[in-house]
Image 1: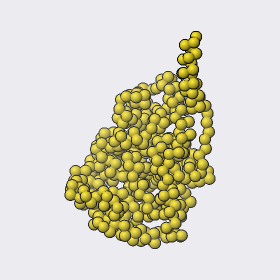
Image 2: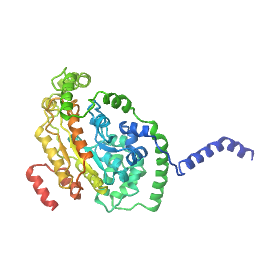
Image 3: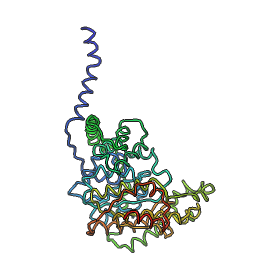
Image 4: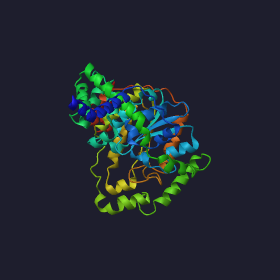
Amino acid sequence: MHNGKKLWSIFGPLIVACLLVVLLFSLPISKKHSAAIEHKAAVSLSPVVFKNQSIKQQALSDKHTHYVPFFGSSELRRMDRFHPSVMAARYHNYTPFLFGSRGTQSLPQFFNINSMETQMRNNKAVYIISPQWFTKQGVQPPAFKYYNGELANLNWLQHANPKSPYDRYVASRLVAMLGKDGTVSAYAHKIAKGESLSSFDMGIIHFRLNMLVHEDAIFSGFQLNNNYGKHILPNVKRLPKHYNYNVLYNDAINEAARKTDNNRFGIRNGFYTQRVKNNLAKTKGSQRHFDYTKSPEYGDLEVVLNQFKNTNSNVLFVIPPVNAKWEKYTGMDMNMYYKSVEKIKFQLRQQGFTHILDLSHDGNKPGFMEDTIHIGWAGWVKVDKAANDFISNKQPQPHYQINSKFLSPEWTNLDPTANNLRNFQNQLK
């Protein structure tokens, strides 16, 4: 008895504390984030916001604000004064909610969008597709894991349908990204094989989800980058009071000229000095063998399109250019690049996604690019105008005709010549 009391005195408080933690994360909880947190999260580009759900779901549901999701990758971090978030704060009646950093390609974006299914329904969005995503390997597992957490995975798994070719595809990609070990991978493997999850599996998913949702609601607001205070507010004050596209575009060209005057590529001075100048010799001709026409990324894009169809989202797709002077120096085959753009547009248009801003031929325009591959200055002015026209004006109701043949290796590996595209189009009928 004495030993029992002694053991309890040692381990009892720990056991009670663990039980209280489990109870805390199991009970219903309602935590409302402040408007300031929403505003900060909208431009934080934090992986916490991307992979979780409480802040973004609340913001996009907020009836007192008009947040519009902008999906993309590393270009969204180029926050000069012409960035869409700065321009919207100065001139427009909506606020972009940014989802994107290096590595946030279509597959992580799918899980992100899936976690906002209710908020996306019948609403608008902007989706920036970079042809550079469409490499032979597609999204890399480390990048996927960094931006995609257990909460998003389990949230998708609880509704996954093993009879759906789209869900089986996502499940197989999830296993490829995570490896074969782990609970999530085991559940995904079942879906990929066309098997339903058991009642026990679903019970584990629901219990774990409840814990993660509580954790997200409590802690996510404390891990946000302050891009709003550092980049958005200071730049808003540097814009003219009234919107004039031509004035802003010319202003952007002039600012770009001042900030790219130490190199012949039109690259921002600091980026050129720190990242490019000392590597010029080994980068010359380094992109001769790049190929964006065959990639699993086309299948990943397809599940994003299917998700937009499921929520009846009206989407503006933006295809950015690459720096023409830099690509000439590195030897990229621009015919290959334009073929990959045509393949992306074919996949969009064949399924009813007709709002496309194709900037792929603008990479040689003054002030359009900030560095070797990222849009900036004048490019942002053009993107902002198209986004505002799309968001602020009523758009026709979309009519999507999704076709799972775009998931097939035949499509993802198709060389997009005009003849091959015509033949594939005939198979869709």
